[in-house]
Length: 138
Image (cartoon, rainbow, N blue to C red; front, top):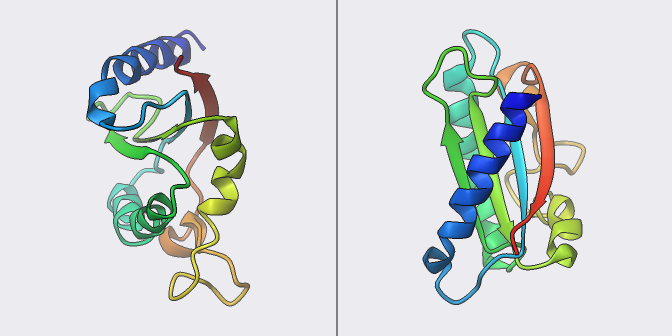
């Protein structure tokens, strides 16, 4: 738990101090997702992010569902996470609509059930643990 608090503080500091990178818009809220890939599945998760998540999120960003998204990968084997994705949003309305905005992309990413594939469909299994939390930036 102390590690999680430490990572949150570090990430919050990074996000607050990178305001000029957002040019016209500065975010007020961040949604942070992180998980640890299961042993031997790291490249499959990287491929899932690159081939499925990034195109879907790119479309959601074009529709102004959020300001920015950044994906981090830990280089430490003993890290509690292998992947972290931080979505910067302008307000709580965007935050509340983020899950729907990230699943509403029509077209080739839809599975037979009409939803985007998750890691289980792409990588053969879910990550060991997916953690979601939100922080206020301003």
